Length: 176
Image: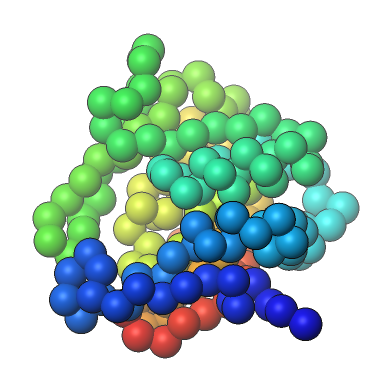
């Protein structure tokens, strides 16, 4: 029987030499694999009420939309700077080679709403931490953070858990 991990391909030296890119598009393309991933992302939260699912750009939109549908919850995208119309709040975070900014509409989450943060991959945790900060600035209560892949050597899980987050990942790959 196949696992979620079996549907994920590794592309060597992408986007830079020495990187082992974990490509989830092969998982998304397979109906059984995709359904399995969505079901397993939801499993630890069975019976938990969520008001909204936050998806981190860009593959988190694919997962987050499917998860929100299954939960009968709203969906909120957290996007790269300059991609959302209307009034937004922003959060800068560091990358291994610089910094980036993510944004969310300032009215996307109401105080006290229960939130699940979703993305495809947890590496250093920078994007997820920035998304968490945005949700918290709007008054949302983050109940959990769910990912397809964890890269434990890069420390993202430790970073999020140090923030008090409940972190769930379907599989882990060693190496960057």
